[in-house]
Image (cartoon, rainbow over all chains, first blue to last red; front, top):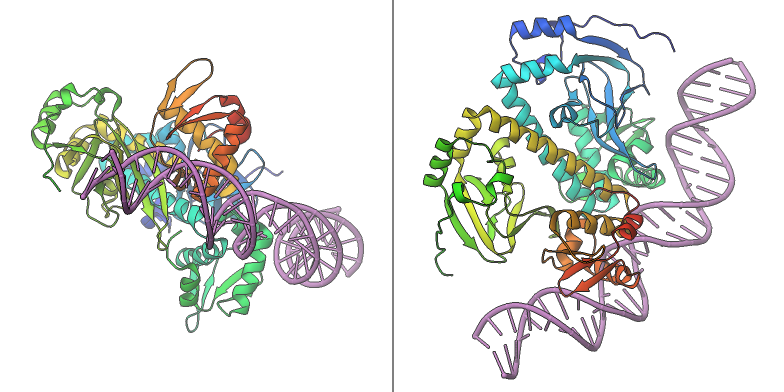
Length: 240
Length: 240
DNA sequence: CGAAAAATATGATTTATATCATATCGATGG
DNA sequence: CCATCGATATGATATAAATCATATTTTTCG
């Protein structure tokens, strides 16, 4: 493997920062970050961290997409979260002072910054605004995770898939003509199955059915949502 | 319905406080709390708050047990959390500044205090120790919820039931003779089903099987764990 | 206390989804 | 550019668990 090249992505110039948790930290803090952080271009398939290892810092996604997942004792993968530009990952383990409870792997290449633990904690402890924001973020994350739990526990695979497509449309949708929206994230059928907690073949079959119902159209790896209202009807609720 | 009687349970004398998030707030803060809070004896079946309503304060359980749950669009219940003496509930909605995202109902009667939102936020904003503790709590809660999600998404009902019994043993176990431990919480089979996300009949059947395997013994409503190692083998992992 | 209601128990049947199997398509890299 | 490997697709079959049905036991409360 070639040595990873450290690239220069200044926080102050980062296009994603204003949407991130760092949207209103001080200039001094920004400068310290830029001085201490590293930023690397990751390729698809590279892993940022592994479950069970010690967190030494925080990942901040400048571009690209990442999946955060756990592997069960019998080797099955469950995706907990998808992260994109502007998202932080790995803060939960830092705050709970635990080893990572999940792994994170790049699914679409991009530049990802790494902020040393000490700097993150420094800002956390000296910037009450940031502290409050971080707390709110954890609280929001918890609310989302609770909703996911309920969905997976109580809804059929068909409903969960429809709900997941709607969720992906919200996060990764690129508006097209008419009602149609392209879901702009290259998820394999297997990834999709590992989000909703089902078998890959089941996802493939259900996507075919949704296609036959003209709810979606399959553009190679990506999915085009043709009839969001139809999907809402399939999901029979919203939220995952 | 008879008017609820406000009972006197001083925080400073509360036997559960030292185990709670209020374990190290200042005396002044304690006094303010005692002045402003109310404390009511709730009977089984009474609801502390309903999903969709606005949180006006924080519940602090002095005694008794509470289930926190969501109801899906098709009327199914999913229990997210069980709370006992020393536990706080309802803080997530306060911190995220949302309506309640779940309901909370008493399953074993007890005294439950209600701390006005303003007092909670006051302590939160003026006591950095408490703030940090609250943040850690949310982070821990999130880690637990993630593990639950994985378990429900990837494990069989049989494995989930075994894991749940082990979890309940940890939280509510009363050591008996030999390896045996009584799970001291009066959960109906339906509640148990709503924790693991399955049908009531399935729980009843599987409990019968575990009884036949001499892993547990059914003491009326309560369950006696006879062979925890056997249950671990059934669960094939630990954590829910 | 005793009737009614709720919870538990168990059987029969159905069904959604997993698993296994095989074929085709498409991407990747030597 | 072709060979190989992984992803997608679809069919056949197995199975865990839901649902429906009906006793029996336990709890509730008038």
